Image (cartoon, rainbow, N blue to C red; front, top):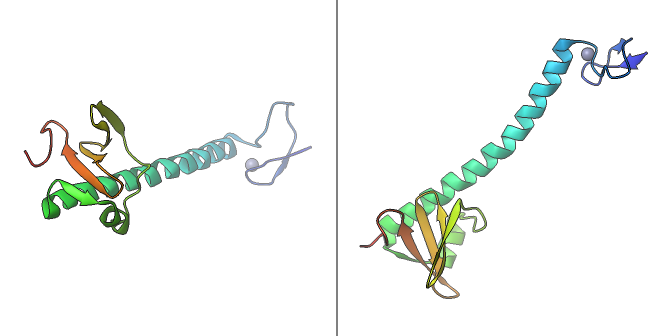
Length: 119
Ligand SMILES: [Zn+2]
């Protein structure tokens, strides 16, 4: 006799049979997928927020921003989509919006396809 991990029901079956039914196997699979997707959604929402913060920063302040302002806005520095190596260092991009550290406290902002946002 086995116990189904999904519904807790008792059943007889082959050694490799884990769930009592196709319904329980499918339900378990769907739950697992939902959990995985929740992680993707969480990361996506951080990336969306990061991009909005960079765009708004540019619109309000121009192409330079203090690290403090980004931090206060809820910017998550280790979430970005790709990097571009330049002679001045790595530009970290969140989709089309990039930021480059120019000293301990300031970042320069970039918009992909338009070089620097200010130009
Ligand atoms: Zn079951």
